[in-house]
Length: 137
Image (cartoon, rainbow, N blue to C red; front, side, top):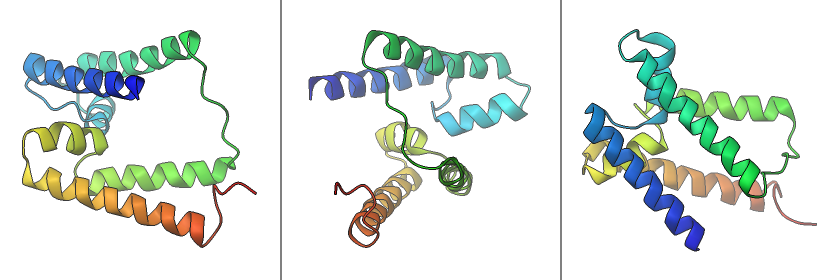
């Protein structure tokens, strides 16, 4: 529980620092889209993304690294594409809406966050109870 609390506090602090320093929301899908498409602030966005990857690499060295997933690569690619399209259609991802938008009391972010939380809960319920995915034998 302590690590979750610390991690959440660091995410909130990072989002606040990014907003204060740049005037922009620290939504990862928007930062990625900007790094790939827009020329303005491309270096800043690439540095932000490099920091995300670097922090993950450092955490993997310090702590127990994540284990490989048992799911087939095509399933993971399909899931990633669905998430990508969802973030584009929804105008942002969980970090943009859930962390940054909700903290600014954005009505659109509140609606988006409730929607993806309910959809995620429904998906897990269907996957585990109907299809038996993720249920130990």
